[in-house]
Image 1 (tube, rainbow, N blue to C red):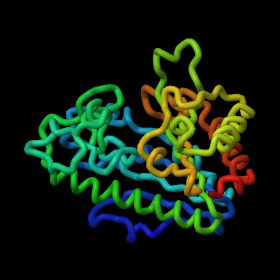
Image 2: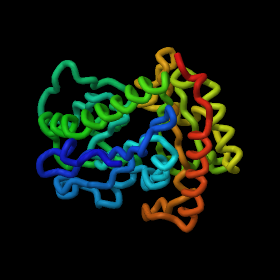
Image 3: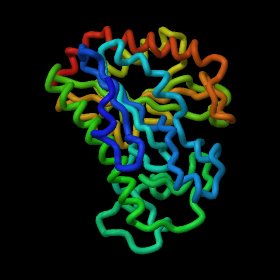
Length: 292
């Protein structure tokens, strides 16, 4: 069941997220898709120096669709509707590049993180391929408006789902779902999936192992934490001592989509069926060992 759009929407804008709930939550798992949003604001399309297709290079295309079966197996699925290039919720709220703005930033803004240095802060300076998004400097008020309208509602909803789940089951496993582009460095032995648990600190090792076994059982090549160990969401919410575990899943886009055109590929339906099998297996697992 989706949350009522009116409870989340900014006046004149699309609701920044959807939460699809099962009729009754039966498992201590929350699934999330923070980077699959495709509602590109007209303001962004009008002012960006890049064509729409280039803006989508940072998007985890169709990941929310791959996990659409989640509520059928007793777990909620939260997904952002806005694109990552507009506001990245897998960052701190205020990781901003001072070079993007037309004046000084407040002193409490994080301007020195490695993500900011790479141009990939909360308001990205570049897309995933390294091309600059804007042809002008932004006002801080623009960034603040996006963070208030997108980042804050997303994290309020996500934190609420985690708290609900932990209160009901004594623990929560957050599965943060992403996709990864093909990379020349992996040409010889490319992974199909990368599981990120912040090198064993954000999730019980047993939980990571169970997810890995499920994926290997489906025939996929899996790596851990290389090259993606987990972003802000994984590290911020993953607190095993408190009964909250966070595991990031990165899926190779080549498995299910045309990366150049950002379209569903010929194998999309088969792969989506495999992801449904993954969800079914995870939701059939006894997770009582996760309790703090």
